[in-house]
Length: 115
Image (cartoon, rainbow, N blue to C red):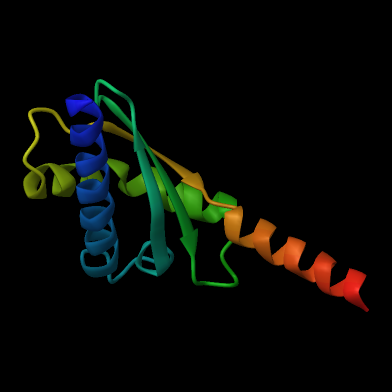
């Protein structure tokens, strides 16, 4: 139980710090500054973190966003290490969050059914 609380607290700290890093530290980037981190899921041993993101840029394609993340991943992790007090900063794997698009699609289907 104590480990679960620690993992949850660390997840929220990483989420907050990653949002701040992406918004403020990459003003010259094409896509990173438009990212919003929705969720961070840490493994129980806190060695790996899955980061779910979306972008405000309507013209952004998933392969282009992935390429920019991959290009800057080491720098993002180093910045995170300087801001978060952890013995070892987890490996980050970024995954595009499709939950908003899915919710919008479901909402449109429901509107069509009502008509």
